[in-house]
Image (cartoon, rainbow, N blue to C red; front, top):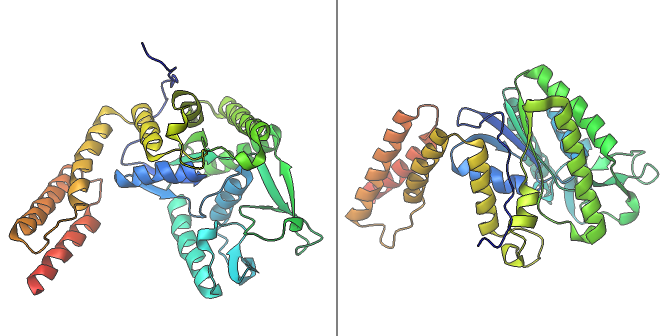
Amino acid sequence: MDFRTHVQIPEVSFKIDHSAKMMMFGSCFSENIGSKLQQSKFNVDVNPFGILYNPMSVSSSLRRLLRKTEFTESDLVYNNEMYHSFMHHGSFSDTDKDICLKKISERYNKAADFIENADMFLITFGSAYVYRLKPAVYKDKYEIVGNCHKFPPEMFERTRLSVEEIVEEWRSLIMLLKAVNPDVKFVFTVSPIRHWRDGAHENQISKSILHLAIDRLISFFGDDLQYFPAYEIMIDELRDYRFYEDDMNHPTSFAVDYIWKLFSKAFFSDATISINKEWSQIRKSINHKPLFPATNSYRNFLKQTVRSLNDFALKYPFISCENEIDQISFILKSQDRD
């Protein structure tokens, strides 16, 4: 007897392979799946503005990339001895203004180049709640921020987006992206991470709004837009608290791995899954930490890993292994010098 219900994932209308150029935007869950894709050698750009939770902040970041509007010092704000951007996650902040701007600009420029050729977007909505800067207290602006950066609460107005607001914004944005690439595809998810600070009831309302907005967008764009039920898998198949971290809100690594396997089954062909398995074995060799690195046996192990990398690259020329080959070759050359 199976003591749990399984989420049925409908057959998707398109598959993801290693030739796809993907961009991921959104909450922590985007980081989790994005990391898995990167580890499996997919061509993916993950959260160039850092973690973003609400649909409007994600949309703003995409629109800015499309406009090619670079960031300047005027986009930075100062609080608690740190420079920040209201459009970016705190990982871009710094005590040095120039370093903060450099981190933002380098990541922005890379993503601005990438988006021109992106043929797939994986979007994760985390919350329908947003924080708007009050015009009376900050530069006459009334804009939604991606992160409050611990500025005084009185600077912001907290509101909840409606289904209509999200649909209107994203329908316009998707049409804009399709004007750049008519064949572009989208995968939407709702983050399984609970925003418990909003309260249990408010969190459910928020997630429901996100679900309804995505469902409405699917009705507009059909097979070009797919929904993956990460949220449903987490709260139903993995409903036990042993699948949550100590904060009881974030999924454990086991839960992320489980959802990743279901994502792979839904969106990867048998051939892509086979490539992933091959690469997984090579990646284990690359990440191996020897107890005795100066031994001949480890040196032979490294040489065999390079051969495996070269064979893999020859077999799958659309997957670059140059960085890994250079990394191991550098270790071998260092051993020769020693």
